[in-house]
Amino acid sequence: MTTTTTSAEPIVTVGASPQLKKPNFFLIGAPKCGTTSLALYLSGHPNLFFCDPKEPFYWNSDYPELRRKEHLHTLAEYEALFSEVSEQETIVAEGSTTYLSSQTAVREILDYNPDALFLAMLRNPVEAMRSFHSELVYTSNEEVEDFEEAWNLQSRRAAGESIPKLCREPTWLQYRKMGSYASQVRRFFELVPEAQRRVFLFDDYSVDTPGTYRQVLEFLGLPDDNRQTFPRLKQSRKKRFEFVHRFFRVPPKPLEPIAIRVRRYVANQHSGPVGAAKKLFVKSHKRPPLREEFVEYLKNEFHDDVMELSELLGRDLSHWVD
Image 1 (cartoon, helix red, strand yellow):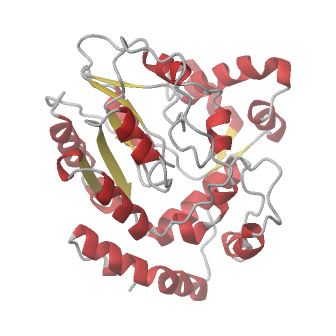
Image 2 (cartoon, helix red, strand yellow):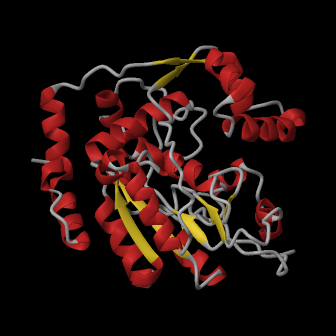
């Protein structure tokens, strides 16, 4: 995809800590393709460290607002996320889903660690973008709850109009660009040596999650940890108390550092008392079906890109759009 870079900020390297283990594995996206659940499963492996937050958004300098979101302004602040890596944790990971669509992230990561390993996950863009839209609504990055209506706003939003007040990254609202994976994957392949990269499809992951998980371990050179449970995460949801959600999204300035720490902690609790308490603030939500005509329109919009992606991956993906 094409991302505007005029406001990009350079990566700040002042205060880097060379004695720390550098992150050497990057789960780079795309959004709503299974990266969050995979990161959760991998974080339980005894030889793998996954940073908190899962998505620091540090290396995409063409998404400057996302980098500010986690208050990571220098390399030292970024590397502090990995300060607790133990000797037995040979794979040091993070999983920012904007890195695949970013024009700068993968190149900047390779400059930082030329031996880094990368994994991208992809999904039928019609399904992925509809799910992505729902997630943006939940996180207050999107105000228009109807996906078809939001899709039709893309031209106006590209011109800077109708951008939700709490939207952290307006590029996210360009659903056609976000779901056009071919150019993103082509750039990824051009930058990263074949031995250091993998692409997995959500189709395979959802059908055989344990098998895909073990393929990832093999790619990372890690032994099988015999994981047996693979809980499903992030089903469609709605906020129950809007004011609570907005407080943690846009806290008062004096409380911002505390709110960020609380938000990071709570986001990673999927069970126990905190996991149970989270359910009080969220309600399940079944998305209404899209109009059949709109589904066919979306398939036509993504058709050529999916065919190009099929050639890049050497796999027939025509069923996504036919």
